[in-house]
Amino acid sequence: MAKKALITGIAGQDGGHLAALLHEKGYEVYGVIRGQLEASHPRYQQVRTEMPYANLIMADLLDLSALTRAMQEIKPDEVYNLAAISHVGYSFRDPVLTADVTGKGVLNVLEAIRLAGLEKTTRFYQASTSEMFGGLEYNRPETGYTEDAAFHPRSPYGVAKLYGHWITKNYRENYGMFNVTGILFNHEGERRGPEFVTRKISQAVARIKLGLQESIELGNLDAKRDWGYAGDYVEGMWRMLQQDEPDDYVLATGETHTIREFCELAFKEIGITISWSGSGVDEKGLNSETNEVLIAINPEFFRPSEVDLLLGDPTKAETVLGWKRKVDFPGLVKLMVDHDLKAESK
Ligand code: NAP
Ligand code: F7E
Image (cartoon, rainbow, N blue to C red):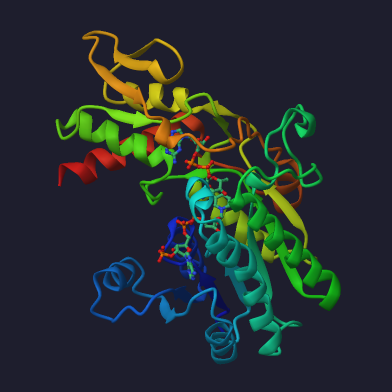
């Protein structure tokens, strides 16, 4: 009998990669998408076209009854809780909804599993995040954050995720549920939403090359992120649920780079060298040959508080799960720019 996996947030970046991986492994794949989409709705059609093998269920993370019905009907062997309001910048603008969906939504999924009487049989993955750490000087380990590093979230998103993280561990301890948390550092790729900085840059670079756009406006260029490829990270999620005992794991590359470096590499892909001039909000990224302004700062993209540095230590995942990222930083930038050059040419 094929195993059944239920993915919340199947329409998101990771949802698509994970659904493809589980389908390849012979799972029956079920996916939760929200809203009241008719089968004829373009968004529904898009997910359907991308994942023809997936069984789609309409449910919102805020709706315990819909989630419970889904658990009762499907009786999944594995649940991957990927749904969330996941944009850090947006969470400052809508903190209450973020707390409800990204925080309490996790409790709803766990309760749905219990109400369906599946707490002893269904394995549960929670999408925890490096945004729970915060990157402050005093809690920053030299060689990167491990599973045991101190938390200090810096955004409503990070705080909501910390609730989700702890309620997942709490239900593991209270009810003996097989609950794992994956503390994932940033992972990107061709499925990344355009509101996140890497995709915003790769799309802009492609459009600039094709003459569809002149320049790009960004916020903080000095923040550092530990960026991996989403396709590598979903393999780690699956491995976490195949262990004998539930646990918590960091997935990261162990390298960190600035937004500035991402820009430089992305423009290099289209043959442009960036030179920087000015400072603060007046800083500009210029085409070093023509002096044309390609990158400008717009304070609209600054956040009330920033995580200035993220660096993860994936030793535990590498040792226990045998997980290792395959795509390196230059490979990730190239993959995204190449994809967007093709997509924007259509
Ligand atoms: P994503 O692309 O933003 O996908 C999140 C999905 O959640 C979307 O499909 C969204 O639906 C769905 N969703 C939002 N609100 C919902 C609600 N009320 N009910 C049901 N579904 C809802 O995020 P991702 O990058 O794939 O990340 C997957 C998970 O990992 C998220 O929980 C994220 O916070 C976490 N995470 C991500 C990273 C990263 O670098 N990508 C790192 C660490 C942790 P719509 O499609 O309808 O908007
Ligand atoms: O920002 C800076 C911004 O929005 C990265 C989510 O998947 O990873 C993601 O969160 C950095 C920040 O991702 C722009 O200030 C500069 O320092 O791409 P981002 P994020 O905030 O790191 C974590 C691990 C998650 O869990 C989240 O769900 O880039 N930045 N200029 C900008 N960011 C954006 N979005 N747009 C800009 O124009």
